[in-house]
Length: 191
Ligand code: GLN
Image 1 (tube, helix red, strand yellow):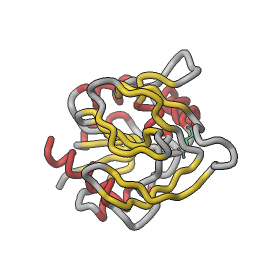
Image 2 (spheres, helix red, strand yellow):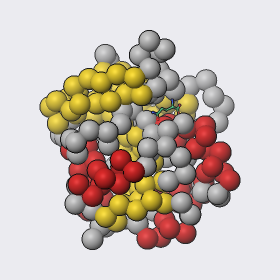
Image 3 (cartoon, helix red, strand yellow):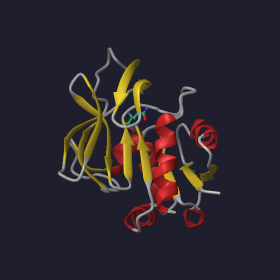
Image 4 (spheres, helix red, strand yellow):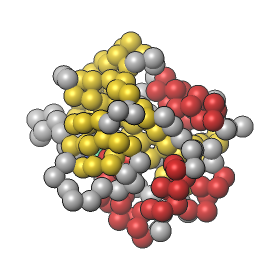
């Protein structure tokens, strides 16, 4: 069976495992870099990207995570995970994994909109996806290789670049598993 890991250092991990299993793959919580060898694809969950980065450094995960993506294995970054994937973070000198050719803005929806839910059309995936945003980022700019999958008020909130997928919202928090299902399909096609 296709095995999909969820980086389990910090953040919303269990809900992703549930959503992976509801989409017909096996879900594994990844806490050690050696476990990356056992999986066909990886989800970087939501949480707090700066806290996640500290733990990534503490457990020596940065290079193994980059190598995992560069070897062609699919990675899906949700919310803080999307920030980890980006090549550039607005206003910061350094980014994290730098695997997706895009520039992101953290906490981009402002204080009044700390969290909200909206129905979004997502290209090729859903017409009416209930998207939950929590202190969410959005994408300011994308490179030529990046396909925009969804926008909200003109801002990019989901995108794909070959085997990398990202969403500013949390697709694991409702019973609608179509976005996770799309990622599971990407992994199955490549494994
Ligand atoms: N605001 C968080 C960050 O910058 C992301 C929030 C989330 O993942 N729900 O990392």
